Image (cartoon, rainbow, N blue to C red; front, side, top):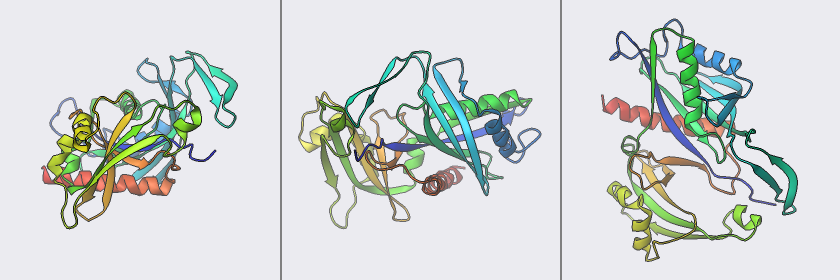
Length: 301
């Protein structure tokens, strides 16, 4: 059956550290107490090849391997959540597969992250591939912070997601925005095959013009977008809003938006129905996103 690929997205975190004595002075990634951050990362992955629980909750994670690329590290991992009884359906036959797992088990979903540790910046950047049914984008960051805290002395670690306003500073305007609604499906095939049972409403800019970035505040509100397209705002099914923004270098980037201002925008890696990116493609997208973030942080100094 074609098209059985879930959408993957990218979220970016900034990680930094200071000592308890000098809370206003950030440590350089080349010296987190007694060794570089990269050394902690290598040990972290090597010490956590088996699944483990994060903060005594329902989330579990396991790190499989890493590969260093210059000042960055690509990490392959699996994560998931326990606490649910799950019956597995075979989508090829649309029948019960006979496979199930209980609340004491967690289905582990593979994903990746890239950590960039450039000396002199005062922070590291972490690009996390967010996948459906995984443990959540924040889980690897929490696990890494817990590990460094337990294997160092006198170091305080902090992290934050790269916020929406900072991200938007790297763009010049909106190319188009889309309201995508998913019709309720009566069988598994309709609900998983790409572009089956969907309705899309798309607004594009006029030739030679561009939709102002200020429009993002309206686009994030699904009800406002529905009113713009002249359709009912009381939709009972699943719906998402996407916006394609133009970078300062002219390249377009597509993001999935949320009406809550505090939630950062999320970059789409692969649409539903498209296969996940290769490692090299994932690395390239992360580094591009990191470059935008670094540019904004440098201008904010």
